[in-house]
Length: 126
Image 1: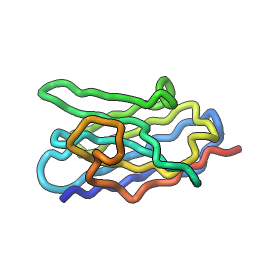
Image 2: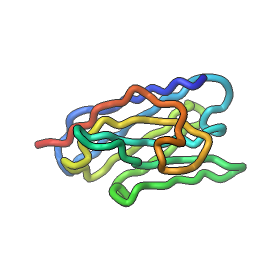
Image 3: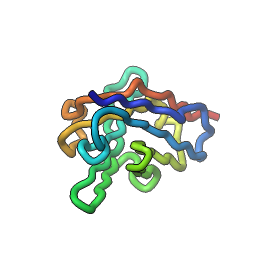
Protein backbone atom coordinates (compact mmCIF):
# COMPACT_ATOMS: atom_id res chain seq x y z
CA UNK A 1 0.00 0.00 0.00
CA UNK A 2 1.18 3.51 -0.84
CA UNK A 3 0.17 6.60 1.07
CA UNK A 4 0.57 10.05 -0.45
CA UNK A 5 0.22 13.34 1.38
CA UNK A 6 0.31 16.72 -0.35
CA UNK A 7 1.17 19.99 1.34
CA UNK A 8 2.14 23.54 0.46
CA UNK A 9 -1.07 24.87 -1.05
CA UNK A 10 -2.46 28.27 -0.25
CA UNK A 11 -3.46 31.69 -1.52
CA UNK A 12 -0.95 33.47 -3.74
CA UNK A 13 -1.05 36.57 -5.92
CA UNK A 14 -0.72 36.31 -9.69
CA UNK A 15 2.89 36.25 -10.83
CA UNK A 16 4.15 34.76 -7.59
CA UNK A 17 5.47 31.27 -6.87
CA UNK A 18 4.48 28.33 -4.73
CA UNK A 19 6.00 24.92 -4.10
CA UNK A 20 3.89 21.85 -3.44
CA UNK A 21 5.24 18.74 -1.75
CA UNK A 22 4.04 15.17 -1.89
CA UNK A 23 5.40 12.84 0.77
CA UNK A 24 5.09 9.15 0.04
CA UNK A 25 5.14 6.23 2.42
CA UNK A 26 4.66 2.49 2.15
CA UNK A 27 6.60 -0.59 1.22
CA UNK A 28 9.89 -0.17 -0.59
CA UNK A 29 11.39 2.62 -2.64
CA UNK A 30 8.18 4.16 -3.91
CA UNK A 31 9.74 6.86 -6.07
CA UNK A 32 11.73 4.24 -7.98
CA UNK A 33 8.86 1.76 -8.26
CA UNK A 34 6.22 4.17 -9.51
CA UNK A 35 5.72 7.06 -11.83
CA UNK A 36 4.77 10.06 -9.71
CA UNK A 37 2.40 12.61 -11.14
CA UNK A 38 0.68 15.87 -10.35
CA UNK A 39 -2.87 16.54 -11.46
CA UNK A 40 -5.26 19.39 -10.73
CA UNK A 41 -8.98 19.95 -10.74
CA UNK A 42 -10.64 23.33 -10.91
CA UNK A 43 -14.26 23.81 -9.85
CA UNK A 44 -16.64 22.54 -12.50
CA UNK A 45 -13.84 21.10 -14.61
CA UNK A 46 -12.38 17.66 -15.20
CA UNK A 47 -9.17 16.60 -13.57
CA UNK A 48 -6.20 17.78 -15.61
CA UNK A 49 -2.72 16.34 -15.94
CA UNK A 50 0.07 18.72 -14.87
CA UNK A 51 3.40 16.88 -14.64
CA UNK A 52 5.07 13.56 -13.93
CA UNK A 53 8.47 12.19 -13.00
CA UNK A 54 9.86 8.68 -13.40
CA UNK A 55 13.11 6.91 -12.70
CA UNK A 56 14.76 4.19 -14.78
CA UNK A 57 18.20 2.77 -14.07
CA UNK A 58 20.19 5.96 -13.58
CA UNK A 59 18.01 8.46 -15.37
CA UNK A 60 15.24 10.67 -14.14
CA UNK A 61 12.59 11.65 -16.64
CA UNK A 62 10.30 14.64 -16.21
CA UNK A 63 7.35 15.69 -18.30
CA UNK A 64 5.14 18.77 -18.12
CA UNK A 65 1.79 19.57 -19.65
CA UNK A 66 1.89 22.26 -22.31
CA UNK A 67 -0.20 24.58 -20.15
CA UNK A 68 2.50 24.76 -17.47
CA UNK A 69 5.68 24.14 -19.44
CA UNK A 70 8.21 26.89 -18.78
CA UNK A 71 6.51 27.88 -15.52
CA UNK A 72 6.34 24.69 -13.43
CA UNK A 73 9.11 22.33 -12.43
CA UNK A 74 8.66 18.81 -11.06
CA UNK A 75 11.41 17.21 -9.02
CA UNK A 76 12.00 14.34 -6.61
CA UNK A 77 14.06 13.72 -3.50
CA UNK A 78 14.45 9.98 -3.11
CA UNK A 79 16.08 10.31 0.30
CA UNK A 80 12.92 11.99 1.59
CA UNK A 81 10.50 9.94 -0.55
CA UNK A 82 9.06 13.25 -1.66
CA UNK A 83 8.26 14.90 -4.95
CA UNK A 84 7.80 18.60 -5.49
CA UNK A 85 6.01 20.90 -7.88
CA UNK A 86 7.56 24.32 -8.09
CA UNK A 87 5.02 26.68 -9.63
CA UNK A 88 6.28 30.00 -10.96
CA UNK A 89 4.50 32.90 -12.64
CA UNK A 90 1.19 31.69 -11.31
CA UNK A 91 -2.00 32.73 -13.08
CA UNK A 92 -5.61 32.81 -11.85
CA UNK A 93 -6.35 29.89 -14.18
CA UNK A 94 -3.90 27.78 -12.15
CA UNK A 95 -6.40 27.85 -9.29
CA UNK A 96 -7.38 24.27 -8.49
CA UNK A 97 -7.02 21.42 -6.05
CA UNK A 98 -3.69 19.79 -6.80
CA UNK A 99 -3.32 16.03 -6.40
CA UNK A 100 -0.28 13.82 -6.20
CA UNK A 101 -0.58 10.33 -7.68
CA UNK A 102 1.49 7.18 -8.20
CA UNK A 103 1.15 4.59 -10.93
CA UNK A 104 3.03 1.90 -12.88
CA UNK A 105 2.90 3.55 -16.31
CA UNK A 106 4.41 6.82 -17.47
CA UNK A 107 1.41 8.59 -18.92
CA UNK A 108 -0.63 11.71 -18.42
CA UNK A 109 -3.85 9.72 -18.14
CA UNK A 110 -5.22 9.82 -14.62
CA UNK A 111 -6.79 6.38 -15.11
CA UNK A 112 -3.27 4.89 -15.15
CA UNK A 113 -2.55 6.10 -11.63
CA UNK A 114 -3.40 3.81 -8.74
CA UNK A 115 -2.66 5.77 -5.59
CA UNK A 116 -3.83 9.30 -4.87
CA UNK A 117 -3.33 11.89 -2.18
CA UNK A 118 -6.11 13.93 -0.63
CA UNK A 119 -5.23 17.09 -2.54
CA UNK A 120 -4.15 20.60 -1.60
CA UNK A 121 -5.90 23.81 -2.62
CA UNK A 122 -4.04 26.42 -4.62
CA UNK A 123 -5.77 29.75 -5.16
CA UNK A 124 -4.23 32.42 -7.36
CA UNK A 125 -5.94 35.73 -6.80
CA UNK A 126 -5.17 39.37 -6.13
